[in-house]
Image 1 (cartoon, rainbow, N blue to C red):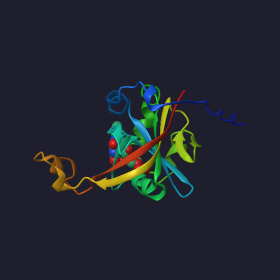
Image 2: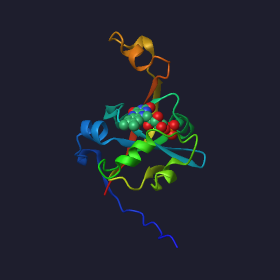
Image 3: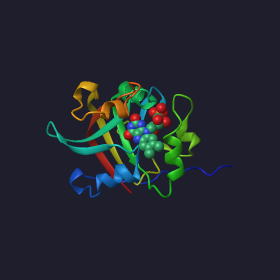
Image 4: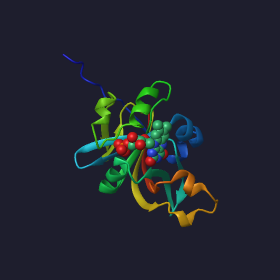
Length: 175
Ligand SMILES: Cc1cc2nc3c(=O)[nH]c(=O)nc-3n(C[C@H](O)[C@H](O)[C@H](O)COP(=O)(O)O)c2cc1C
Protein backbone atom coordinates (compact mmCIF):
# COMPACT_ATOMS: atom_id res chain seq x y z
CA UNK A 1 0.00 0.00 0.00
CA UNK A 2 1.29 3.50 -0.82
CA UNK A 3 2.72 5.38 2.15
CA UNK A 4 0.38 8.08 3.33
CA UNK A 5 1.82 11.53 2.61
CA UNK A 6 2.74 13.49 5.72
CA UNK A 7 2.07 17.18 5.30
CA UNK A 8 4.73 19.62 6.43
CA UNK A 9 4.56 21.99 9.35
CA UNK A 10 5.04 25.66 8.58
CA UNK A 11 5.67 28.57 10.92
CA UNK A 12 4.02 31.93 10.20
CA UNK A 13 6.42 34.86 9.75
CA UNK A 14 5.61 38.53 9.31
CA UNK A 15 6.48 40.49 6.18
CA UNK A 16 9.09 42.36 8.29
CA UNK A 17 10.73 39.01 9.15
CA UNK A 18 10.92 37.99 5.48
CA UNK A 19 14.67 37.90 4.75
CA UNK A 20 14.91 36.57 1.18
CA UNK A 21 16.32 38.58 -1.69
CA UNK A 22 13.29 38.63 -3.96
CA UNK A 23 15.53 39.04 -7.02
CA UNK A 24 16.96 35.61 -6.18
CA UNK A 25 13.74 34.11 -4.85
CA UNK A 26 11.65 34.76 -7.95
CA UNK A 27 14.26 35.42 -10.65
CA UNK A 28 16.64 32.54 -9.93
CA UNK A 29 14.85 30.11 -7.63
CA UNK A 30 11.39 30.59 -9.25
CA UNK A 31 7.98 30.07 -7.63
CA UNK A 32 4.77 28.21 -8.31
CA UNK A 33 1.75 30.50 -8.58
CA UNK A 34 -0.94 28.30 -7.10
CA UNK A 35 -4.62 29.00 -7.49
CA UNK A 36 -7.98 27.33 -7.91
CA UNK A 37 -10.94 27.22 -10.25
CA UNK A 38 -13.96 25.48 -8.74
CA UNK A 39 -12.57 22.26 -7.24
CA UNK A 40 -9.39 22.20 -9.38
CA UNK A 41 -6.14 23.42 -7.82
CA UNK A 42 -3.47 24.38 -10.36
CA UNK A 43 0.06 25.79 -10.23
CA UNK A 44 2.41 27.30 -12.79
CA UNK A 45 6.08 28.23 -12.71
CA UNK A 46 6.82 31.94 -12.55
CA UNK A 47 10.18 33.73 -12.67
CA UNK A 48 8.86 37.28 -12.98
CA UNK A 49 7.26 39.20 -10.12
CA UNK A 50 7.93 41.37 -7.13
CA UNK A 51 7.09 42.33 -3.59
CA UNK A 52 6.40 45.81 -2.27
CA UNK A 53 3.99 48.19 -0.63
CA UNK A 54 0.98 50.02 -2.05
CA UNK A 55 -2.40 51.24 -0.78
CA UNK A 56 -1.06 50.79 2.80
CA UNK A 57 -0.66 47.05 2.20
CA UNK A 58 2.28 44.67 1.85
CA UNK A 59 1.80 43.13 -1.56
CA UNK A 60 3.20 40.82 -4.22
CA UNK A 61 3.17 41.53 -7.94
CA UNK A 62 2.63 38.63 -10.33
CA UNK A 63 2.59 38.71 -14.13
CA UNK A 64 0.45 36.08 -15.83
CA UNK A 65 -0.18 35.91 -19.57
CA UNK A 66 -3.76 35.97 -20.76
CA UNK A 67 -3.50 32.47 -22.27
CA UNK A 68 -2.57 30.69 -19.01
CA UNK A 69 -5.04 28.45 -17.21
CA UNK A 70 -3.65 30.14 -14.09
CA UNK A 71 -5.17 33.39 -15.35
CA UNK A 72 -8.60 31.74 -15.38
CA UNK A 73 -8.03 30.43 -11.84
CA UNK A 74 -6.86 33.82 -10.54
CA UNK A 75 -9.90 35.52 -12.00
CA UNK A 76 -12.25 32.81 -10.71
CA UNK A 77 -11.32 33.03 -7.03
CA UNK A 78 -9.41 36.23 -6.32
CA UNK A 79 -6.76 34.53 -4.22
CA UNK A 80 -3.46 32.79 -4.90
CA UNK A 81 -0.14 31.84 -3.34
CA UNK A 82 3.50 31.95 -4.34
CA UNK A 83 5.10 28.66 -3.30
CA UNK A 84 8.91 28.71 -3.32
CA UNK A 85 10.35 25.21 -3.67
CA UNK A 86 14.10 24.66 -3.46
CA UNK A 87 15.26 24.99 -7.08
CA UNK A 88 17.99 22.35 -7.04
CA UNK A 89 15.69 19.73 -5.49
CA UNK A 90 12.66 20.53 -7.65
CA UNK A 91 14.21 21.66 -10.97
CA UNK A 92 12.38 18.92 -12.91
CA UNK A 93 9.03 19.77 -11.31
CA UNK A 94 9.50 23.49 -12.01
CA UNK A 95 10.15 22.71 -15.71
CA UNK A 96 7.08 20.49 -15.89
CA UNK A 97 4.83 23.05 -14.17
CA UNK A 98 6.19 25.67 -16.57
CA UNK A 99 5.53 23.77 -19.79
CA UNK A 100 2.26 21.84 -19.32
CA UNK A 101 -1.13 23.54 -18.84
CA UNK A 102 -3.54 22.72 -16.06
CA UNK A 103 -6.26 23.09 -18.66
CA UNK A 104 -5.16 19.71 -20.02
CA UNK A 105 -4.32 17.72 -16.89
CA UNK A 106 -3.88 17.70 -13.11
CA UNK A 107 -0.31 18.99 -13.15
CA UNK A 108 0.21 18.86 -9.40
CA UNK A 109 -0.51 15.12 -9.37
CA UNK A 110 1.52 14.71 -12.57
CA UNK A 111 4.55 16.29 -10.90
CA UNK A 112 3.97 14.20 -7.75
CA UNK A 113 3.56 17.37 -5.71
CA UNK A 114 0.90 17.94 -3.05
CA UNK A 115 -1.58 20.79 -2.69
CA UNK A 116 -2.73 22.00 0.71
CA UNK A 117 -4.74 25.05 1.79
CA UNK A 118 -4.45 27.74 4.47
CA UNK A 119 -7.19 30.32 4.97
CA UNK A 120 -8.84 28.66 1.99
CA UNK A 121 -5.90 29.58 -0.30
CA UNK A 122 -4.12 26.72 -2.05
CA UNK A 123 -0.34 26.25 -1.91
CA UNK A 124 2.23 23.56 -2.65
CA UNK A 125 3.22 21.63 0.44
CA UNK A 126 6.77 20.91 -0.78
CA UNK A 127 7.54 24.66 -0.62
CA UNK A 128 10.15 26.05 1.76
CA UNK A 129 8.33 29.40 1.89
CA UNK A 130 4.76 30.29 0.95
CA UNK A 131 3.20 33.73 0.48
CA UNK A 132 -0.61 33.66 0.61
CA UNK A 133 -2.42 36.54 -1.13
CA UNK A 134 -5.81 38.00 -1.89
CA UNK A 135 -5.96 39.70 -5.26
CA UNK A 136 -6.49 43.48 -4.96
CA UNK A 137 -5.98 44.61 -8.53
CA UNK A 138 -5.50 43.26 -12.04
CA UNK A 139 -4.62 45.06 -15.23
CA UNK A 140 -3.37 43.99 -18.61
CA UNK A 141 -0.01 45.46 -19.72
CA UNK A 142 -1.21 47.20 -22.86
CA UNK A 143 0.94 48.53 -25.76
CA UNK A 144 0.27 52.21 -24.98
CA UNK A 145 1.79 51.83 -21.51
CA UNK A 146 5.31 51.07 -22.79
CA UNK A 147 7.83 53.91 -22.68
CA UNK A 148 10.67 51.89 -24.23
CA UNK A 149 10.45 51.27 -27.96
CA UNK A 150 10.28 47.65 -29.04
CA UNK A 151 9.53 45.99 -25.69
CA UNK A 152 5.89 45.41 -26.52
CA UNK A 153 6.66 43.90 -29.95
CA UNK A 154 9.50 41.81 -28.50
CA UNK A 155 7.52 40.24 -25.67
CA UNK A 156 3.97 40.32 -27.07
CA UNK A 157 4.21 39.80 -30.84
CA UNK A 158 0.96 37.83 -30.82
CA UNK A 159 -1.01 39.86 -28.26
CA UNK A 160 -0.65 37.31 -25.45
CA UNK A 161 0.12 40.09 -22.98
CA UNK A 162 0.79 39.70 -19.30
CA UNK A 163 -1.78 40.74 -16.76
CA UNK A 164 -0.36 42.35 -13.62
CA UNK A 165 -1.93 40.96 -10.46
CA UNK A 166 -1.37 42.79 -7.19
CA UNK A 167 -2.02 40.52 -4.22
CA UNK A 168 -2.34 41.65 -0.62
CA UNK A 169 -0.10 39.44 1.53
CA UNK A 170 -2.36 37.74 4.07
CA UNK A 171 0.20 35.30 5.48
CA UNK A 172 3.79 34.17 4.95
CA UNK A 173 4.72 30.66 6.04
CA UNK A 174 8.23 29.23 6.29
CA UNK A 175 9.48 25.75 7.13
C1 LIG B 1 11.18 29.39 -15.66
C2 LIG B 1 9.81 29.74 -16.13
C3 LIG B 1 9.24 30.94 -15.73
C4 LIG B 1 7.96 31.31 -16.15
N1 LIG B 1 7.43 32.50 -15.73
C5 LIG B 1 6.18 32.86 -16.14
C6 LIG B 1 5.59 34.08 -15.66
O1 LIG B 1 6.15 34.82 -14.82
N2 LIG B 1 4.37 34.42 -16.17
C7 LIG B 1 3.70 33.64 -17.08
O2 LIG B 1 2.59 33.98 -17.51
N3 LIG B 1 4.23 32.45 -17.50
C8 LIG B 1 5.45 32.04 -17.04
N4 LIG B 1 5.97 30.84 -17.44
C9 LIG B 1 5.19 29.95 -18.33
C10 LIG B 1 4.10 29.15 -17.58
O3 LIG B 1 4.62 28.58 -16.39
C11 LIG B 1 3.60 28.01 -18.50
O4 LIG B 1 3.05 28.56 -19.67
C12 LIG B 1 2.61 27.09 -17.82
O5 LIG B 1 2.51 25.91 -18.59
C13 LIG B 1 1.23 27.70 -17.64
O6 LIG B 1 0.43 26.76 -16.97
P1 LIG B 1 -1.14 26.91 -16.80
O7 LIG B 1 -1.76 26.95 -18.18
O8 LIG B 1 -1.53 25.67 -16.03
O9 LIG B 1 -1.40 28.16 -16.03
C14 LIG B 1 7.24 30.44 -17.01
C15 LIG B 1 7.79 29.21 -17.40
C16 LIG B 1 9.06 28.85 -16.95
C17 LIG B 1 9.64 27.52 -17.37
